[in-house]
Image (cartoon, rainbow, N blue to C red; front, side):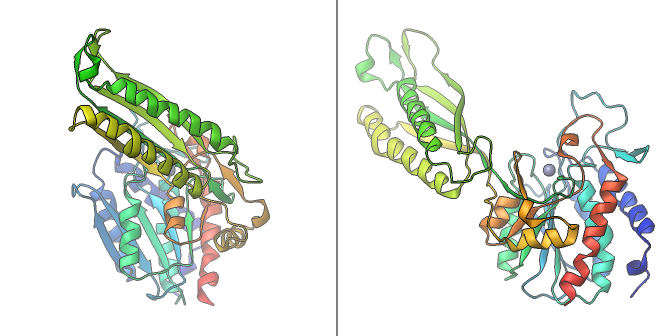
Length: 397
Ligand SMILES: [Zn+2]
């Protein structure tokens, strides 16, 4: 064992705080680049012999980082965290949000809780993973653009699949106070654009009224919302227990006597199961492509209905007997039978959809996330470090 593996708990916490201070110093707001932050994580992991994949986005201004520590075999554990943070504009901070400030056992800064705290713990634990001669690997998966619809994680997951790695479990370290979370609803956001043909209000017969067609679409969303109530899975612990649909904004038309050629429907969908996703999409597709569009194109062949994806955060379906929940229970001393569900979305559903059993479990309180004076307790970080410590024997046997 090297010195790093023998660090006293106090030193591990000190190292975690140093790393967290550096991470918070990169203002990785989702709309900005993150390459300096990713390069910093890379610089900590490369000397440990980690196999590193930098996975850039289409703009080249941001990247994910996938680090594998230990043998390149199946059965490893993913520690997943995003390094982007929400903006600070309009928020009244008492300190510089991009300078970690310590006060009375708490560490203040944007992202300290959501979720650079977990990322700092994983990076601080990395030397111990590297020294432990693991039988199965730890994968540290750092992503961009989680806060704007989990846009980075799919590329990281695809890269992992392309490398042929099949991990046994994924721990998404979003703040749960180290409690075990086995489920959350998805959050899908869309804008459906209807484009018809404009004209004088006296000649609707030669026009395609985009508002008319959009409202028929809205009426179907409303009908589906009612049907989803009856499809709530037995024993669902979500509140409400069924998948929900809502239209938040409808925008079309300019004046009473002008037939509108454009209308946009801004709607969202929070599914509790993947079967509800398929159910809703099939019905909306049947209506749009099977009924509305043919009618529109009969008058105006160029008419279109286009659904723009604003963000798709897949849900995490609770799975009875989940091996990921059981693993997190052993690491934290928690009770797998009491794993809960939360109302916020994470990247966990994406890992689960890729076939990796996944649990959400990380340090800090979600109530601290996104607010001014965001903070995490030193005790929260210490609890996370203790759990990561127990990962070494889990992966050694
Ligand atoms: Zn987060």
